[in-house]
Length: 622
Image (cartoon, rainbow, N blue to C red; front, side):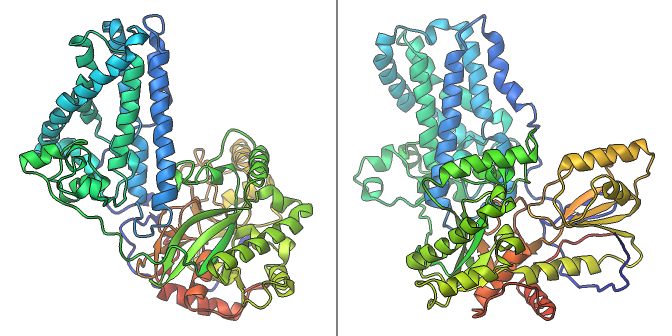
């Protein structure tokens, strides 16, 4: 359907924040970063991991891979536990997307380099790794003493050397870009710096061999895994103030550090250089006390509003922080499998999960400084919303979640996310409100249910009317013809997409258009489907696939915390339906928002959105 709107309302926006992308007809601009421009190519990581296998004829490769894989798994497990018990509900400790992207590219580099170093040492000194297993205990004791007497002082002085300004700028400053740290931040270093640490930590397993005459790969592996765990402990964002670590007469104050000790190093830069033993800083006069401030958090059991979501397929599952905290802002990732197969696999996984739980709790966030919101997903997948035979169970799960959250936290305000308010499912939430009224427990609890669709409609409408009147517009909706419409769209500069279309359908249409010699005029594909699944535009690099119906949050005063993770979009963005429900919760709305959209309310809600610091994507159509 071809559109050319006459009305063109121009909304004035504040200047875009430093992280915001501005979509232009030529290229994507971004305000210059103040961070390091270090960028590592990651597409060959698997090949780099497999390099030690090339030496299988010269030396046993299994020890190297057992140690490397164990270190990777232990790091991932610690990351998951840290998220669950430390970061999940701490809305004051929000890591930036830039930091997560940077650390994701580098946190396993050191482990792979150590695998290479081990293979080299195995070839040069085979006896160093394969001594008699009866001597493992002796090797372990000698390795411990080598760490205490050699590694600890070596690291202290090497670390101070790395803080000399020229070395800080060229190497160690990369690690210190992380102010709020994760356990795996301990592994994130500049590439050259890894070799300094290999030399610094090497005496722990070299000395027992050269001095004592014995060493074993099991001891080396155990040392490296334990080293990673203790190093991760020092980078955890937790406060540990037990007297056993803080009392001046306690030996642990001098012999074993706490997370606050190393957090102090990241805060002060020129203090607390020691590895695991503060003794060296105390002796050298570089020790500074640091107390992490954990005040200001609202009570753990406070929960004023719940946005009820659901799984969106494999690409959504992979962004869950329990799988990897580094993936929470990733775009919706497609595998080589057809979308239907991905849905089926995730559905089978969800059915197993439902044997143990009916919902999945995401991080909490603070609204306007005084209310707590949270996303909670029912364990349902896209397949549950495709087949009408599942509708009754989905609605019952929503009602049960509302019951449970009211009993646990007294929560009265709920938003329905994405397919949970589907017309066919519950008539845009109307059936949910009716079920609440008929439920013997909930009927007198003043439960409020909102879809947020008014805000979604307002956002999409205002995005569309900002398109200049002289632009040619093509709309792809529910009744799309995968061949005709997707080929026809190439004749128009601006295309608006309101239906999720598999990527291979675009590929097929684009290739057919090439065969038909259809010249491409499309520059902007404005897509308001959820989740936003990027399409491959390699055939037409001038084409930009842009998510709309997506708001940027410009005010940290109104909304703070992890409200934006696992949604397949960038940090500090939020879907309008979610934002609309949050505004309702903040203002204490005591009426439901279900069913049809009120056109009169759209303008009111949009003005509120702008006042609270939400804004649409800024697109330059020139």
